[in-house]
Length: 213
Image (cartoon, rainbow, N blue to C red; front, side, top):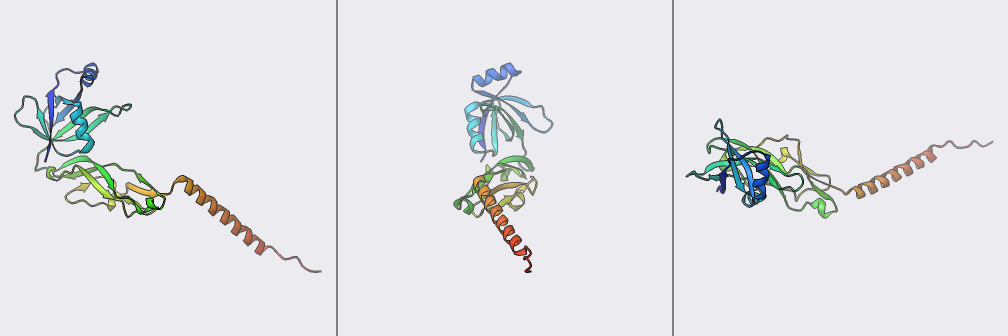
């Protein structure tokens, strides 16, 4: 089910007005659909921030003055680099019977075996580019990492979702479990000491015996 997002038409432009809108709790946005002229809009800051915080699914964009909502998805979001607040949103209009390419959030579920053994889970890829029909568009995608041991990883080529084609590089790493750096350093030091001891022992065995006169 699509979520309803309300929007007003924007009639004032420029960075000065954009800052004023944000102070008023409004976020500038643009709606695109094929070759039609782009529509400049304003969104309620709280509503769009809440929506982006839990889903990137289908949207019924209800524009002020229009009877019917427009089916769309979020195509791009710009955030303030200092506050991480939403500053601009791009919407892409869709046709339900045609495939679309969108970005969806990727969530890891489960606690890896390797983490229980002292490892650290690294989540490297947090979004995926996918292609699918709008009716199959998920709010997010989940990847179970509970079977990962220390040294194990999951790559894009390991994923398989019904009715969805993943467009990322197949060799891109999604998540991995590795030892903490301190533990790795300790292991390397121990291995170096062991190697040095073995080399010393071999050297003693190979040393020529002194001849008796």
